[in-house]
Image (tube, rainbow, N blue to C red; front, side):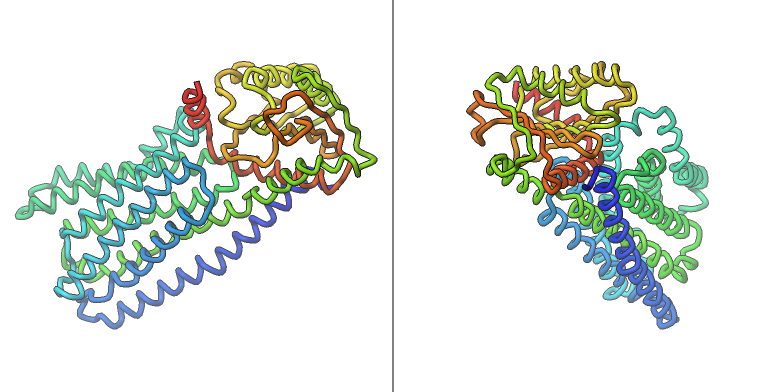
Length: 464
């Protein structure tokens, strides 16, 4: 029989395997190809005309834009994820337009260092949209904003752009004797870089190590660090020594391209993780099981008890929970019990953990059903609660006890309007237990990376 730890282990093993493929098959080759491309460019362009410097970075951004489009339209994202990744898509579009303008200045107009130029409008706009994405992650990760040190960590990340900003103002007459426009553009870059890098260290330090999306967050943060470093280096070079910038402009372009690659790979990895954790096929399995009555007529070893009073659901769940010794995983579908009954059910779980202090409970709840504040004050440390926002092909409560037993509580028929017949079933079929176990683990890993508190409260307010 496959218990929850085995199911989780298999999911994480699949994740680790896919991560190695991504690193060895995409990230490493892409970086090597980019490196040798810029080495060749630097050797060919002996006069430092910069004709080809921005062509590889433009190609990288075009690929990143296509990858982000695929994520938005072909990966099953939550509404809040679609909102966040729209910022990433617009960021890549702005960068791409900026790079194409930069290529036009270098390749067609023969300007080796087109700075400042019209391209900077789009570069700065991209940084603004990327900042929106990163700060939306801060709002998503409530544990980060609740930490007292996250503001100080943000300022640590921003200290170098702030230093260059102050240095630019202090040495205005020395750096910009004849160029007010460049001074304004440099100031805009330093300010935008200080803002965009602010969330990166808190995101890295406060993201749980068992978060399946941690590599996604790390890649984004690393991408921002590299892009900000390239921004600062390029801008500072332009202010103190334009001839030096002309000679090493290809190097800054290479560094920018590495940042774009890391951001693109982070999007690819997010899409891959969503596919690994996608539970649609298991949701359909639950629906098939339910429509066939969970095979009750053909399962001699399964015990079924029927009743016609919805209040008995809570009594049945109390009895089931008391049978657990160490841990219990509970998945509550949307149409089984009402909101007030759900709050009472959580209180029952709290009572059980107080009687059995070694009992740990994981509870997956439908976000439209519950105002999270109703239960937060009563929940003990032995109870972990996550919310899912997608329809589940089942109208049952499934409880997996100690990785060995499965209890199903739900409607006797598939008609959710028929609330007169209920059942509680002890399932002994190992294949059925495995379906529920794997479904729960995938949903748990997926939903713990998406904070549905705001969605839950918004939907609850809307329903009322």
